[in-house]
Length: 609
Image (cartoon, rainbow, N blue to C red; front, side, top):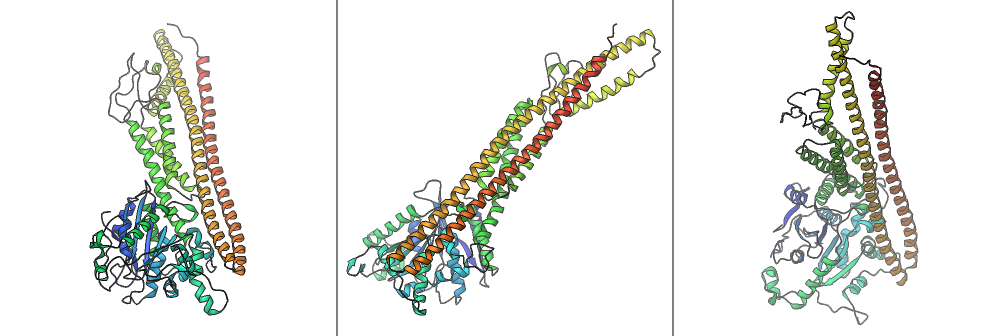
């Protein structure tokens, strides 16, 4: 994108909606996305930071009056400057606390969406991080009412799991003029932030109100960082900051800005869904639509429901992608007619494996393997359709005794049967031809026994013809048997490859789920250690109990996931065994048919001229 685009706008009635033009942009982004969103009071310079992250001087509107310039949420997608194969999505949000809006719920929704969509959340404020500044971040205390993790716990407080899915937190303090000192000693920016978020001892209502937003920041976000920006330039130049030369901007301000951008580039993670599922631009668009529609309908967004909705969309698309890979490959194969069946089977196996791999790359949480099964059924139907139109090269001896129709298969070629050129036509045409010849021959054999010598001679010739036809019929059946055996072997190899890919996919999903839980546990352990260090033993003990429950739930979730995967593998393997059983039955029936056809030849009397 060469400039920002509005992602989420507001209708005249105040309802949020996602802009279709923005969704179309995100639909084209197949890469993983790092999403950095900025929130904060209006007219605090949020847009400037976003422009710098985009590597541009201008882009997001800065404005030069007391009015809030940004409305809704605007996005800017650019190549990530340090992570190859990744897109950086910048979200500039409408300023909070704009008196013109007169709707605090709207501000809560904007804040909530920034949290849900980002992998790094930048909170932008002015002055200092004092109690007033923390109280202005009231929206963080409302997140328990705005976001649910699990759909089943409708009334339960599941905010203890927020740390699993919430973005990293950066507090950007603009126009900072104080000395960073704590108890007379110089302090780093991060130490300054931790000092500002320090809890007060006690249980009075006033103390609890003071501690609540601080506890929410500490407990919900997996990591915290602070940057203090000095005044960028003389007051009269601030209104057109984006137009200033770097020589007109404070070197200290530029240095902090550079450090801020460097940190955001290096530390901001790829956006992930619940269970560690990586988000692409396409999925981010679906997420934005899902969350906005949910909020606009008056329902609380649920992370679990969002994953289910995304899985349905992506798994259906994954089936389509896999099937297109297979079908296009088989269509190209038709251009190489004529082919031996083993060549068709080999290509079928290769394309099936590629189709499954394509499906696995895009799909997630196909818990019962239903979407993979849909791909297999659709692929097999496509295979049968393609196979029925192939002209397979039949064994040479079959075509020496009689001439086939001049036009066969798709009607694009004429093939005569000569001593040095094999006939090519579909198996169904040949079988019909042999069937008709067999009927004619049997009618002749049942003719009147009182024949003249000349008629007997004709009968002898007829018996010879019948014998040749029976031999040819056997060869056709033997050819079908060979084809079935090749198909069974191809299916066996295809199933082995499919099972390997499924297990690889499942191992990766369980690994991501485990890593997600470990990151959250590390964050909780840091907070517990900080509470103990600052003398909040009761809170630390309570957090220890929460962590034990957290570990138990994670272990249970991982066990359930492993069981789902095991059942999925078992179901897939059972479908394969059922398919193989059908083919084995066909194999037995064809063998019996060959033996029965052999019997008349063995019993046929020798006829002389």
